[in-house]
Image (cartoon, rainbow over all chains, first blue to last red):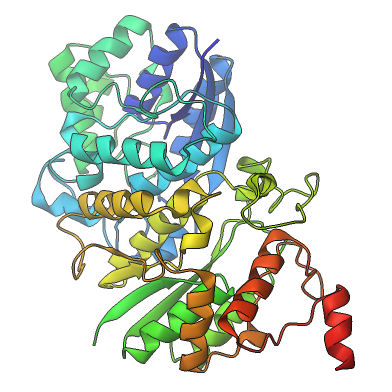
Length: 233
Length: 233
């Protein structure tokens, strides 16, 4: 049986990826990162899906990243999470410098220790505009660097890093997940990390769009007007 | 003034590098990693040199690596640190999987946050045989990957990663440090992390050889016979 390490935040993309890998019959070590994000409640969903799919869950305690890699609205109380469209220039405030390289590096170390054959990440095409560490060229280079760094000590099947959604849109992902029966009410997207999804930050806007475009029912409870309208229907 | 991030363990190589960079007039952010190593006492020396050179010191608390990246004698009480020559096959037991990629990734994130122009690592030629993540091809790939991952957000001078000793031997390093006036009694090498250097593990053997070959007085107190002989002289 193939063992894989999956980086799962508890958001729609990574939870869908996890179900996809599990559907292939892989034995999964699910790795979630506490990097001091406001919305660390997302990790509860990562753990829940990991256990539901008979995987193991590892929470990596790196909350110190919020202090050391300061200046991002994702981790700093002094910087507001911007509202508006996900692809807008203002979303650059949410960049945590080098976050994905850090996560891939740690996950690759865990993969070597666990004799896993790959590390999976759920970066997708919608991330490319804002986040340089979600682009295909980064994923390819990170994969090759990991292969060199672990030469002689690893069990990689082929390239260490697997990124099934790197050219998919979030709409594609919802479509795939819907077919797999993923319960999206058990995922978390909103960067603000309040009790409900805010409905107005970039990731919430993107989440709503994905459901709408995929023509899949959005089970999310939002704070904003569209939630109130839905609630009446 | 150029600001650089230097990864410093408190060993001879990284402390020498730190003095070299400081001699060039750079403003230094010194980053030391607690990755659960037995010999974490080395970090005290990293901090001491950082402050002596008017740098700031950041200790990165990643002791969880000992559990998650298990199986290395450097971090596990269940695996003995091997004695003998540093380059011997048995030293493979001291490999912490992907350690340098993890360290470089975190240091690069800190560098972006601090608007630093480079990240310096003190890997040297003697490390190449055992540790894949100390070889020149790894350092080059990691540097290029960091550049791609942080595109548009960084202040890199040229390639992000600087590795002045990548083709130097430990003997070269001691020679350079001796000229710079580095006090090697304030460095730590031994992987066993006892009160004194053990004198018999691979890194202690390498430390002694470096002083002998560089014809520089070795100020280290070892537990073994050579220490007892020295003490009588």
